[in-house]
Length: 252
Image 1 (cartoon, rainbow, N blue to C red):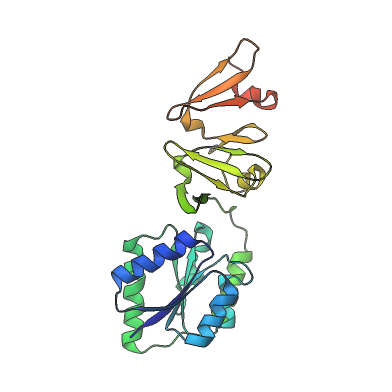
Image 2: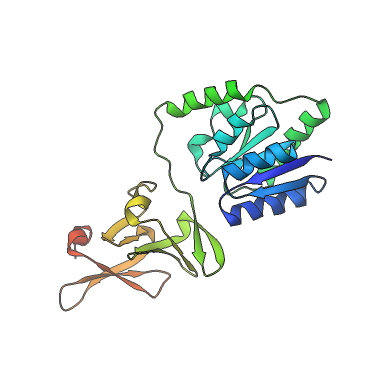
């Protein structure tokens, strides 16, 4: 019976991958699910699975660190939210990658490839050599990584928001609200940090604590005091524009 571990520091991503694997490949036994790279490495050493599904970015040890340290012990499948990690080096040897959000169709392709390797009795190639090639590619100039999905907390629930569906972000001293047309959640990432992973035309900063999706803006209006407020197409909340960013609406 084929065996695997799953390592991802996001609860929702980890549980979704486990659910899809159980649906598409019911014969696969999931030996452990891990929240960080250290636990993943311990699980590989303890259980000796055939496959390790590793998130590239995890606390303590990254997925790449785990792959290096577990050289040849199992086949590696990386999961990543960033397009620029989906590079040619992943296609070498036993390494594959799954771009988040993972689809059943893409996962089926990966499973088919793994089944072929297991049936043929092929063993993973030298991961040290493969990881060296991957490191070299990652050091080459690339475009900045862009955020495609946001995992936000709402009470005890973790919700996944597509960046295209988010209407605005609003920060306070502790959290940032992530607001869509019919839902919202909270993250600990600041507006300043979010900007590093967003294109300038994706979200406009209109206040030091607010970024709005320009495609979500219905209109902007001035009140009797000259203050500018943004009204949204699919949300009743109105967002105040600070004087620093009033130039965006200078035609008013």
